[in-house]
Length: 117
Length: 113
Image 1: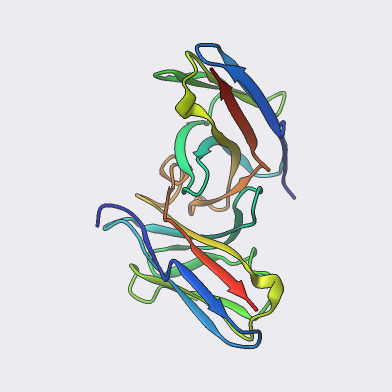
Image 2: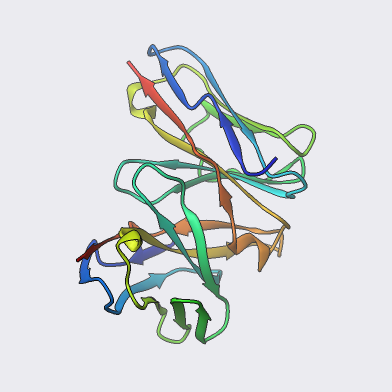
């Protein structure tokens, strides 16, 4: 595709429900990154993949958060038993190759605005 | 851990030059990137520096001093459309397997007529 796409763009869910956020990176991009962004703040790293391998998940807040990229393309970020504090913009990004310098240049998607009521 | 500091707000007039500074403290530092984000939009890549010195891309330039753990983004011939938030981000690499970006809090640039 022309750019990184994410779905849904908006998600409202009740506390305690599970949600799955989808990211479709730019075709052929090796690396895929997940970030969370609060209003007025910079993106906060969650996890990233090279191909289908999860390289770093140190930013996932707790074990309710998980991510996968089974075929090295589309990725899903899953939040189980959502809590109000999970409300945020979740952004996905991809880069053409793994490692620098390509990893400096990340292409961000439009994000999924998650609201937990 | 990693931390970055940049001013929260900067105001300048159209046609002027503005410099946005970024200082960082991090282990495993590999490079410094800059991103622009307009209200309601996605961050977009502007430039990066892996080596000391100045990198120029059109009206935008970015500078890095690794010894001082300091960099800046220089915007020339400011236009109204440059009003946005600007983030510096350090690239942290482990085992050359690609890297996550750690972002600063962002600098909101307001360009006045």
